[in-house]
Length: 94
Figure 1 (cartoon, rainbow, N blue to C red):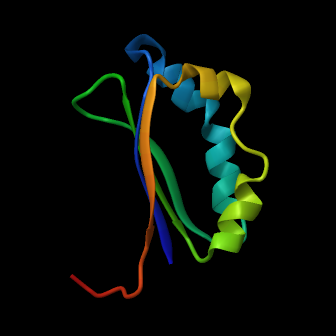
Figure 2 (figure 1 turned 90 degrees about the vertical axis):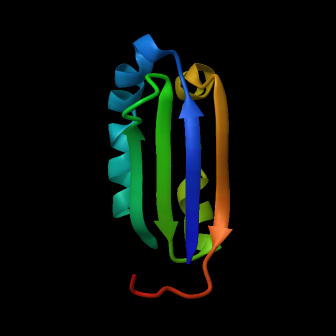
């Protein structure tokens, strides 16, 4: 399993519009083969921060979805990003 997690930072005044523009991406990801979860959410404390969380079954399925990439408008709006891929070898109940 893969987890993609991290943060994006956008202009605080534009964050809600940015997230609204991502709705179709979230819908498409959640419908994609191999997507277990996909969320882009507003941070409760930092008005510029967007939290990224994704879970995928495999690299191949993640790459198939990523093939289209972000729109130019979305890419330009991101001021800073720190997003990483984590490989999970086991899952346990808390």
